[in-house]
Amino acid sequence: MEKSEKLIIIGSGPAGLTAGIYAARGGLNPLVIAGREAGGQLIQTTDVDDFPGFPEGIQGPELMSKIRKQAERFNTRFISEDVVSVDFSKKPFEIKTETQVLSAQTVILATGASAMWLGLESETKLRGKGVSACAVCDGFFFKGKNVVVVGGGDTAMREAAYLSKLCKKVTVVHRRDQLRAQLALQELVKSKPNVDLIWNSQVEAVLGQDKVTGVKLKNTQTGETQEFQIDGIFIAIGHKPNTTFLKGQINLDQKGYVVIHDETKTSVDGVFVAGDVADYHYRQAVTAAGAGCKATFDAEEYLENMK
Image (cartoon, one colour):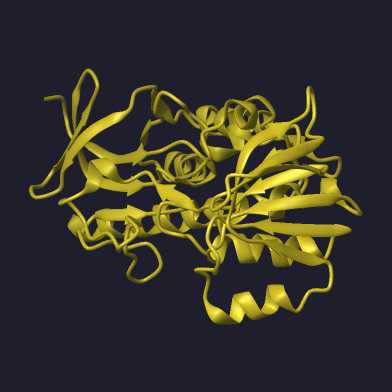
């Protein structure tokens, strides 16, 4: 095994890259394990209008490329492999990637979360062309238009409530006959005059050639199908934190998110966390970036105390 790194950052979305910028400037010579699909969720987002500093807006992939170049400017190092496993039971910590075993005195986990999709071919084809998994990111583009929100949990209710302020009409499609969301969120959505609910239905196909024009719904009880004209569809069936490789190594909650103590600390001393891998509430690029900054300061302080 090679020499022990001062800091290894796992993940290369806004949290991981911001951590890289601050760590490199702080003299920690960080190594970022970027993963095969580097750049986080913003790589799959088209127009980003809510990240500070871009008055005309910016494309998601371009924003991530710029942040990465900024990290590289301060000599942050990158490995474009996925992490296979970690061993946090001993110090220095051990991290196995696809081709090598690395050793680190501190680690920042910034692997993010992935939106869960329906798994339809038509959905994949029209992603970013009217199919979205983030109302806060993309809702603005559907101002005064008709949209569908798929799901019945907290995520779906939050998306529907947000979209009701922008869209002409929001139709929530749920495969059961009752919602799973917390009561307060259900009441909020039901109080909106421009929100409708379609029960016992699932999406069979998203319609449209180069943009969403409609949706084909199937009744889960009768098997009947109907087509519905819409301008956009928001898939809100939840997010899955990218923590499979962490099971048994660190405290995770029931949904698999990393449990946080004191802003960025985890159940393992010397392992810190930033971004959507621990945050299922805000889930914004700017909050993830802020968390990456905080995690680096905490890792730096930990290393100082180690001396």
